[in-house]
Image (tube, rainbow, N blue to C red; front, side, top):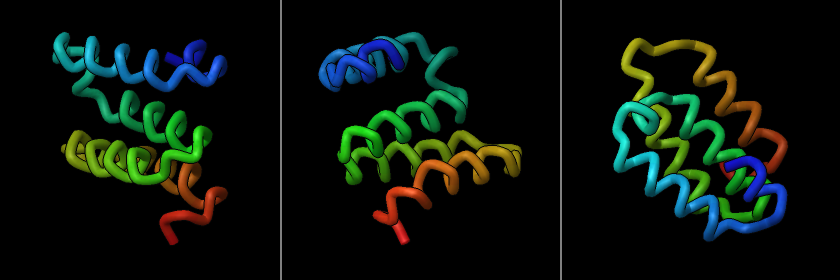
Length: 82
């Protein structure tokens, strides 16, 4: 996913995301959605990033503080979600 993002191939990233969703074990981790949000923020796709962050919150069932720290790290520099 990161290699596709580095090449600015967002449609490729989204294909990987859909593939991961089909394989529920991979897509069920909050870190996946943290990475997705980061890719979208870097691409300037803030609405999609916000959706990924909301998915991150849902998957963080144990309220792992590091998930929220990652979310702040992604969002704060962009200034988009303040």
